[in-house]
Image (cartoon, rainbow over all chains, first blue to last red):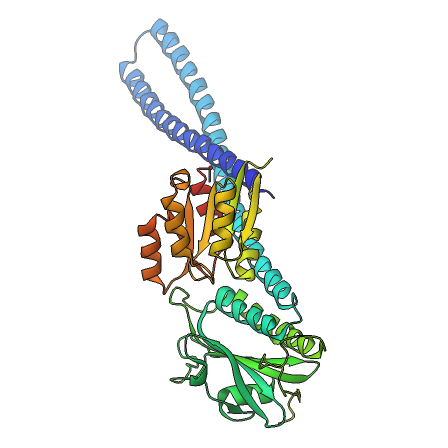
Length: 286
Length: 126
């Protein structure tokens, strides 16, 4: 659905709601009038009974009562019709709210898909290791909204995770981590993304430890990890999209890094960190 | 022929692509991309644009310098500018607004926020 169509639909919905609101006012006025006429009928009947009177007066009174009954019947019929209309109005309002909620849901889904598409596209846009690392960093900063994070590359000969890119702190402030030790090393050894729950009673990350660690695996082999230490202040927590991006990074970032290492003519392979002397580690091998 | 021409000056390809994705949902819009402040300056002075999105932190020439140069050009003085910042970069944002930026967008960006700002600055109905 295009924006113009959505705007048209909104305008139509607002017009419809305004019309229904006017209908509600009229209905309420009509119901008041019905009540007033009922009271008047009771008063007239009581007055006629009290007056008694002659035959001629009785005929006249009978005709008046008959006319009034006809009017009351007509008003009752209209009142019933108006009640039905009110019910339809409520149903239409409910449908309108449901459509508005659905529209918001589709907007959010569209936004999520655009983010996932862009992340995937950028990860595989280059075979240059430094550009792949830059793409990973951009996704973590701009799409997930991490203020402090580190990207670790797995160095097979030493069995350690070496920080190769970061944001929010100097690179040398992130330690080299032996696989299997500490939170980051354990997550890489285990091969399962870790996310600390911030729900009440849930697990809270310890001081200085990341709140999320994404192991980077390709073809069952570890290539590194992304450790997230802090989100931007405007982000209250992780969204469903963030978790989907974690999943995308876990597989696609690793595949992109592996592809960049395998490209023989890549000019910056030697200096890219992620591609220097590093070899993969089998999943769960530690 | 496009109804509105929008320039995106941003060094991050990821951010550029996301902005293009969001803005292309508007009808009659032509989008031009620039990858740093200098590239942005060349494009904005060489062609007509109805709106410019400018990142603050860029190589070669940053967004603040670009905004001040745009505003010092009489022919571009009224052109709407939206800066792209992080929430933490409050000082940069305030400086950008003081230099003449009309709006700001914080990362991570949301498509509906981008569209809302673009429509507002282009004076289009919501």
